Amino acid sequence: MQLAQRLNSVIEPQTIKMAKLSRELKAKGINIIDLSLGEPDFRTPEHICNAAVKALNDGYTKYTPVVGFADLLEAISLKLKRDNNLTYATSEIMVSTGAKQSLYNAIMCLVNPGDEVLIPTPYWVTYAAQVQLAGGIVKTIHCGIDTEFKLTPEQLEANISPNTKLFIYSSPCNPTGSFYTREELEGLAEVFKRHPQVTIISDEIYEYINYTGRHESIAQFEELRNRVVLINGMAKGFSMTGWRIGYMAAPRELVQACEKLQGQVTSGTNSIAQRASIAAMCEDLAPTHKMVEAFRQRRDYIIGALKKMPGVKSNNPQGAFYAFPDISSFFGKKNGEHVINDDSDLSMYLLHEAHVATVCGSAFGDNNCIRISFATSMTNLMEAMERIAPALAKLQ
Image (tube, rainbow, N blue to C red; front, side):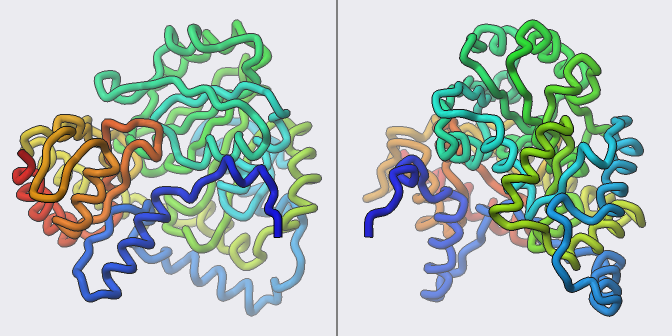
């Protein structure tokens, strides 16, 4: 059997690879603390689950419209107005099987072979892979810890070319937790105004998990509104990762194109999960706020612990549930047979020496860092830090 050549550009995500390694070691009886996956450890709120049960009892078990139930599209429209002061008609909104499919739909409908796509690093691993599947050319822009891993208008201006078709970013960001303020987005928006050929994909899946007070979207700038593809979903803010509901808000022309594509791939999204999502958006947000407060406490603990470790440099993430410390000071050091040449070596060292699973930063476009998820219990986090600190101290 001869596989398609397009698969040659795609590798297994490091996040999934580390999760597999963790499971293998756990199966051998080793006590692994897994800080590799970005999945809230909280149960889906009860009122959302109750809405799913009601939907099942009410007979919502048939095929659904490709774009999503009409009342879910209306709920998303109301949410965007309520939380973001953004006005989108239901014809400008589409529901997919997770935010990842919403991203894939948009990229496949926008990018032609040879089109240049700008992605500031660090970035979520899937952005580049999806662009490559579409035949696009990925052009990354390095954003380091000294600028909180955020892109400046000067960097953006310097990297846009006549071939640039698309720009993809997230805020709050996976893996750094960085959050763009309104003023920072306004600076980027001024650059985009001078380059009307560039469409902007704004991944806002971590919108609710931010520690700044108010989420800011680049879609708020009216001059760019018809060039922005807003991606969001239920997974992170409502602890609904397994429910697989994502959505986009975008110009009607793109939504119609994505409907055509999705109609040939998955068609409509899970009926029960859609009904539950209406409850999530329209009913009590208290469980979400409680979850975010727990994440804030974990963040404060993790960052405090990392800053006490010699050789570790960390920013203070303003959103999401990740720390992304710079660990490059350990390159060239060793402990017995363990030699640390790069971020991958350090991540594997922590797995085997400290029995803590992290993800190497090169998976996200920055080989000076590792990603640590604090989407787990405080007990696990405290034990993990108590293991990591001595393991790093042994590197000489």
